Length: 137
Image (cartoon, rainbow, N blue to C red; front, side):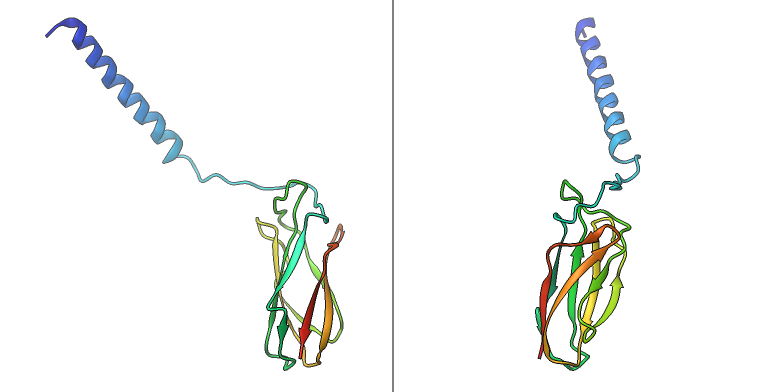
């Protein structure tokens, strides 16, 4: 075999093993990528929604309220304490009142009194401008 071909084969084998080594180092042996968002809360980007919007006024049927507290880029801000502002006729249950890594907080609402009630989300930095209206009948 020609020395020229032998050199090329050795070079290709070294290149192959080097490539495999780099791929393994960056994909398998590194820790999972994590991200923490310590950006400032932008209440105008934050939002809340209820599902369903209507429930029986029997103090058993629940409406789930989900709030997302976001920054200026629309990314969730974690470790924000959220509380609700609503009628005293509504019972609120904190499922998750401190936002997770996606900026989400969750509450359950019940009532034994019929009516339509506005609900707002409040953080330490202020009130989310959007509010929802839930109905118990």
